[in-house]
Image (cartoon, rainbow, N blue to C red):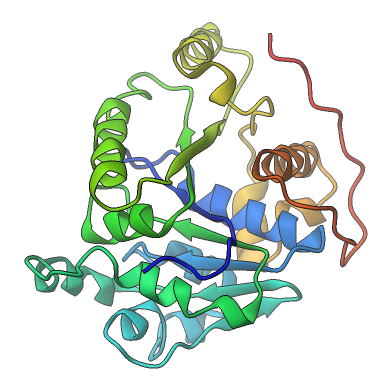
Length: 276
């Protein structure tokens, strides 16, 4: 079952861990909410790091209602974490569903059914954080999404697993979700100084062409600081906040979303640079 309205549903996915999926999902969600878009984040990773970064510790560590209950046919409990930003939290119990859903006819359509039931909430955008593997949860996300984003780090073997991911996406398009499209590739945790970083960036640009977002997200210690404070990078007025805001603008443009009134003052933004 697909959503009854055309709300963009974007999954951040990569079968390789440590590429910044959760960070990008979180920071773009906050940036888009600051820009006035009503955003729902879905944490489908059993590690639950997205949920832990947004909820108070006592709440995230003692979840009794979240994605797990919703997938199992229970009530849908969505947390409102700030104006225009909501969360369907995930936790380690999602791991138990990997084996339980194997062989079920609708094993990969359960998240699509949940998202279809959200039409009355009128979210402008839904972002899904997925596990770093081709799991049942990842396949549910790909089946439910309208678009997918591939985060990559400029490190050796950064493209490792990408071919497997694209092969899996092709199978999902053929059997479950023919409308699924690649929104783009985001270069994350980037240091421009090392020659190897620039070489790998060149390989990524050459491999994905215009699908690579123009804005890269630089490496910064601010990520850990804002997570500890349960804030967003866009609220810190740093180079990182500028990059996230410009990336959000590219995101809005690629999805064809209309202009919204910001819910809070924005930091000064930089102009996207042309691709080298």
